[in-house]
Length: 130
Image (cartoon, rainbow, N blue to C red; front, top):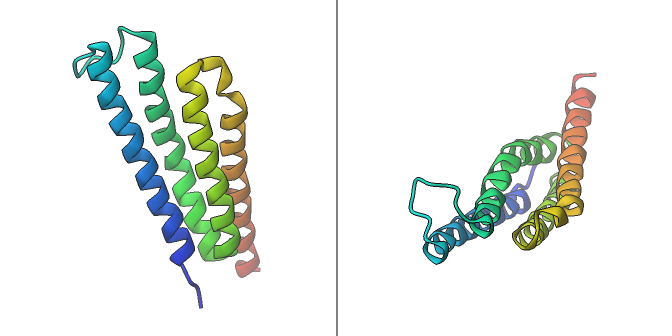
C-alpha cells in the first residue's frame, strides 16, 4: 500500500514556490514599469521573469517524474529528492535574480534531481514488468 502524503506535500511546495515567483514578477512589473504583456525592457525585470518561466518549464518535467517515482519505486525516496529539487529551484531563483551567470550550479542540481526521479521511476516500472 502506498502512502502519498509526502509527495503530496512536495507537490504543494511546488505550488507555493510557483505562487511566490508569480508574485515576484508582479512586484517587479510595478517596480520597473513593465506593463503586461511586455516581458522586456529592464534587465532586472527580465531575470525575475525568466526565473518564473524557467521554473515552470522545469516543473513540467519534475512533477511527473516525482509521481512516477513515488508510485513505482518509493514514495519516501521520491519525496526526499523532491525536497532537493525545491531547495535547488529556490537557490536558482535567488542566484539568477542577482546575476544570470550565477544560476548554473542550482540549475544543475535541479536537473540532477529530475534525472534521479526519472531513473527511479523507470527502474520501478521495469522491475514490476519483469
